[in-house]
Image (tube, rainbow, N blue to C red; front, top):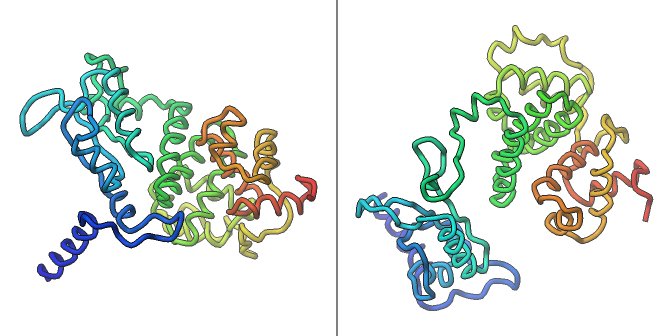
Length: 327
């Protein structure tokens, strides 16, 4: 078995590090060497990089997906490995990104408290620790953090992560008494969770999620799926009985009848109209002077309210409902 593992690693190494170019992929499709490289994140030494720096060669020739930066070099027990000041760090990240044909993930371990590579003494703003964030109960800040995480989930196509972000967003919005937006976020999370059968994400959020799921079920949305989820919560039999939830049909959120529980907001209508064109999320965000994460959140709300999960289905559905005039 160990020999088989070695052969697999040798094969990958030969593909990745071979001096000869791999067979060309179809036009517009990344080759195998690029796909392998994008899975790799490396560390390196240096406060600046020149064109002949080893990490620059890795970015150019091996298409690595990211780098991780440190202020302290453990092997040499010295500071100044990659980070010395805000100005220096900005110049370094610019130099690294300039070498990449695919945008790099540039990571740093910055948790706040004792774990922080971007230290105040080096000119960086203070980072709030996880413990302090957990005791602040700042819903506005929580939503801002979720926006940032949502961009990461989108770029990495991490469905489970996106489901969890949407579920947390639903709870935060519900705490702010924004029930319509909370329901839309939860419906989108349910639509994403259904194909993979994700349930733990919801169960881990406890009683507040139970209450929100029951409210959505009362609106006759994906009732069968919600019943299955509620049954997995601890003390499910005590917290909700069969009569607590509608017990009739189980509509599919993607094929429900032509009604809407929540109307679209003016901003959602504006974005829906732009979805008719060919612009992507970044172009729409630029046109409306919004962040891509904000536009994506609006699009998720639109999908949930219209009961669809694709752009062109949303446009077609809106035309059926006379929200958009037919073309």
